[in-house]
Length: 329
Ligand code: GLY
Image 1 (cartoon, rainbow, N blue to C red):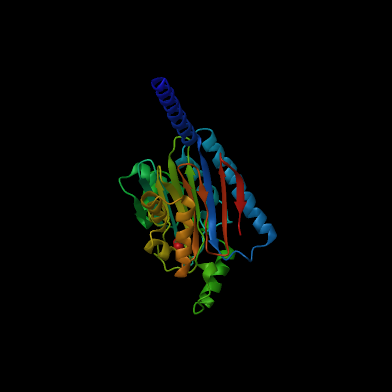
Image 2: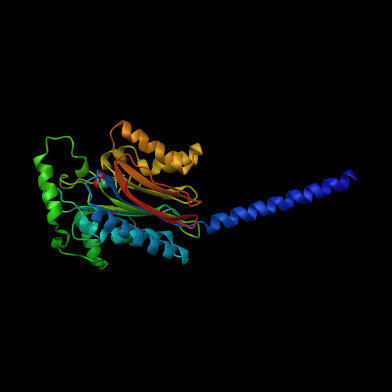
């Protein structure tokens, strides 16, 4: 009698284990989604029309990127697509909307990382590349290097026939005015809105692969040759399968010194923290040293997090576990 009970209990235990294992396989295999940002900073001066325009662009981009993932596309394709959409818009500080450096030239940075194998590609200080994020991916796929800068990056772009544009493509009266204003206020410390703005995307695909991509024009009035966190793997961009993917926006120098993107994943990996805790804690810690900005992050279960310590961050997410979400404040 006792033996029969024991056998039944054991059979139930085995059945339960098989069910749990299947459930977790199904859950992780089916989780997918994308998170994007369009920069953090002082965004309170935005008109209602401008806010609407930005929200529509973020929404459309999320819907298309989600479709890539839903159709079985890779997280690398989804993040490259999302970032290049923002680069082609004048609404964001990246690609066509890039701000001017102190010499009235746009110098752009971008990076992309594949969490499946930690392969990464980046470009910095490029001036004539229509989509720096696409060139960053080519650095990853077609060279033995991770980061190409300036003229070398542009020669590589010409060699592989990546789209080159005249510098006038990036001209913007609005950004030029912003530069002149920043120069006038050079002795004023309160120039936070001129310091930050970047675009980025992180995604998890149906195969469990995480990717991250980030692109920027940097800071208005930056010194020629200044490179921020965006093309620095571990600072502006990080992707690690089974842990998380992160893209940063903010005052780049701090994000380099605190290795922000990688730090989020490190806390999850070694301290067993949730994505939400690791992401929001680091953004709070940065505020203590007046390091302004934000991050977007996704983990292996398509949990998402979008903390920021500025008055706004253009952001949005769409996963198979959560509704389409877009916000600025
Ligand atoms: N986070 C962008 C930059 O500082 O260049």
